[in-house]
Length: 224
Ligand code: GRF
Image (tube, rainbow, N blue to C red):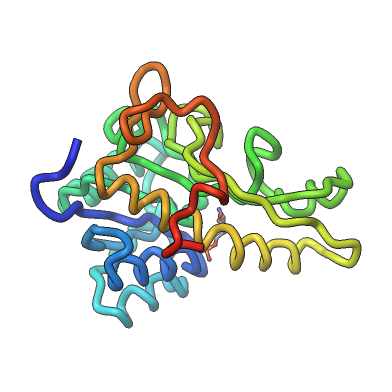
């Protein structure tokens, strides 16, 4: 499937917005053929919102605490997202679990990035957990969002080596700089070109079934 016009992208954030910055930069320089229609945060006053304001992208705050439960928040969030008529919705450091109705509504167009080599370390505190386990490598994964937390089909993942002197902060910083900031723009570029589809059996990439996630070797030159 290709989009009739330039794909419209909505990014969901909660915090610093480093993934958002990498995605926005790639939209601006044309590596991602999409227009960043809006940035939506479930937390007020976070740096990601300042960034969106600063670059003239529509920025919306929808505080989850203002809603009586998860489903009420999800419903409001869906309404806000849909105002921007997105072809693609990207969770980028969005620290909120979404429920089944929202997931079903955006099935096949909702992506997340998780800072781990899934299926290892779904959930929080991934960098510390990889260090405690004595892993040789750690990384990040872009995946389609399904009802299973951090468990949807993986599009791309890439790793960095863990160093003897790493702590959770140094490792997180290297995963962000060397992996997250590259693989997420790349996955969104493929999405925007209509090269990635999710169906009942899993992911199709350029018309072929993806048996395993793509990797660093599959990054196009512009994303390396
Ligand atoms: C990233 O590591 C992201 O993968 C994780 O939270 C962190 C947020 O970073 N879920 P940022 O907001 O993109 O700077």
